[in-house]
Image (tube, rainbow, N blue to C red):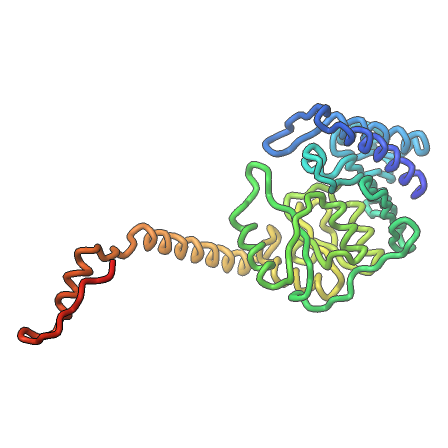
Amino acid sequence: MLNVAVKAARAAGALINRAALDVEAVRVSLKQTNDFVTEVDKSAEAAIIETLLTAYPGHGILAEESGSEHGAKDSEFVWIIDPLDGTTNFIHGFPFYCVSIALAVRGKIEQAVVYDPNRNDIYSASKGRGSYVNDRRIRVGKRTRLQECLISTGFPYRPGDKLKPYLNMLGEVMSQCAGVRRPGAAALDLAHVAAGYTDGFFETGLQPWDVAAGSLLITEAGGLIGNFTGESDFMDHGECVAGNPRIYGQLVGTLGKYSKFAGAGDKAGLRQTLSGAEDETAASGNEEAAPVAKPTLKSRRIKADSAAAPVGSAAQVPDAPF
């Protein structure tokens, strides 16, 4: 099954690479604000589905663009597909995007492929058999202190995304680690964590096709992945954190209170923190709105005269030198 998934990913990658030669000619549509789809997304998805269903006509399909329109509706085998993760990068010619294909068997991910067409790298994993990039076995990074780690993330970009809590969350992580990167394709971000290129990843607003393949790459490479409170059954939760076991634990400790599944106490504490930050910002803004008046040239001269020597003294205080 993994070989068929690799074949499908390469077929999609060939279409993407061909279109990338003249990206200005690619037709782009807007699904919603800042959420784009191109003719390349659709043709790549069609190529993947055709390859998979030719080999396994009884399997189901869950794809980003066509949903569950294709394939069997009641199969225990479901292919989860993102034909072009990082569409915004692609249409701008920014070379960070990928093809993501995963196979869920009775709800558990058992096969995974993430293909980076820019580098011609195939990240793959089969349940119980480890993770690979091309033919090389990969493992998550070995760092154990968050302050030494490079963390990747994704920013909210859709209407309704909660930007303020995210900025607070980002600020906390940035203050605790060596650096944060936002490349713009979650599936490839997760593949890079699995390979040890980055040490951790977190993001909100995700869909199953964004994280399905990457989740198996992470666990087969020795890492952990879940929602912000550390629950491993996270695929439909819309939030994700990943890393090696030590870094994963530290990120969960920081991010847990921002989860929609956090306890009432954590949520109350977070609301208090956010409220305090808003009050502090407002106070700072008021101070900036009423700056201390600067002395004028005339006032400075008057002040200089008042500091002159007593009456009768021969000493004279010169004017200020301006």
